[in-house]
Length: 400
Image 1 (cartoon, one colour):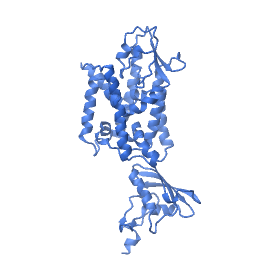
Image 2 (spheres, rainbow, N blue to C red):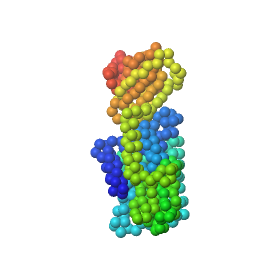
Image 3 (spheres, rainbow, N blue to C red):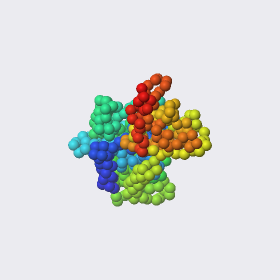
Image 4 (cartoon, one colour):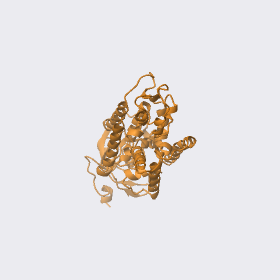
């Protein structure tokens, strides 16, 4: 099972590296913790933070489902940070570095650190409506290919994590990972558990010595700790003649499952989340016209493809151009649903067909707008598929 897990780790790490450096995709949109950061804004305002997307919610949902099924197996099989941390520890031992053991009491206090990190990140992110810690996030520095908003602190933090992982088993994952804090209550309720047969156990503690999260397996009848990653290091270390350890559902307690089921669960659930994200994506930006929040007389939807809708801020501009007060005004605008992203983004505009039509909406989004309040022209940043704007700043300017 150890070889199988290493191959799965390598596959996910390779997928991340290729996606970031070869395809040059936005890997941040697939981070499950991004779903946590974006949740408050989506529930309260109907939109996600710039650089994130609804795909973050699909991945977060998948990881939570996995936690309920196979505990923190996502960390042990699929998380790139978990893989790198674990492999650094292996590399450290192979070059002669001695793994430092942290006293149990100190470990218990340090484990609370991830809840502090989670609270700080969510407070500032949800309060300010921005990803405030991206500049110092070593993971973001990697997946953004050193984006322009990255600071030196990102590499300082990365260096500390690397050095720590060489001499202490997975310190970031155990003590500081905010996603670990999110998964903890779900993992504690996990459907599957490691169990120990006290009569067959010799008390050799080999299982405990190889546990990456320092769970005293040899002292427990059943591993219920939320930090269990279902890595099966303990099962591999247990003398096979004794067979004191097994894995399976919490009930019926005697049932024993082969370890490969955990790996299959990870692959199936994550694959299903990615497929669902492409097949049935829900909008990452929603805005209802404040003047027309009620039902329309003849509701209709204009399904558009629009260049320039790259993030939440640009999607907000859609409403600005629809709510204009010049000759291109749309009286029947009701709601915007958009899927911001690079290239042509999908945009659904719900409107009252008795007051407007799809052509009027295309014109409102595409034509320049004279803002009477500031007496300035606002050139539209949007290009709607199938509509040719009049050019320049519109007919009013051409007559000046």
